Length: 95
Image (cartoon, helix red, strand yellow):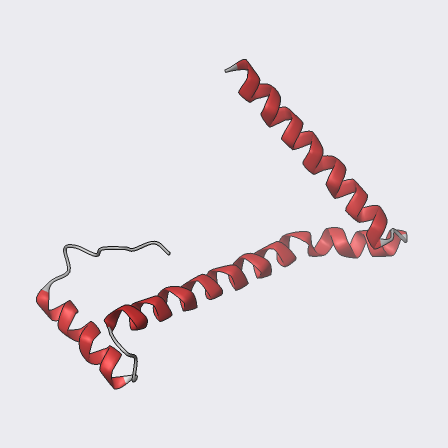
């Protein structure tokens, strides 16, 4: 597990974190801050999924209307991913 050191925190902020950790019954400031980071990561992951659904929604709807199966769509995306990976490798090999 990695360790983070937070510098540049003023005394008021440090006191707030300590008080907040106690009031929410965390075992310490580190546990409280880990909780905040986990919450933020969960929220960010949810937002990415929502954004992806928003972007791909019309494509998904169109493919359903055209009668494409999930397997056919998966094959299209896999082919595209493979193509991108191959392009990146070619560019990397040129460097």
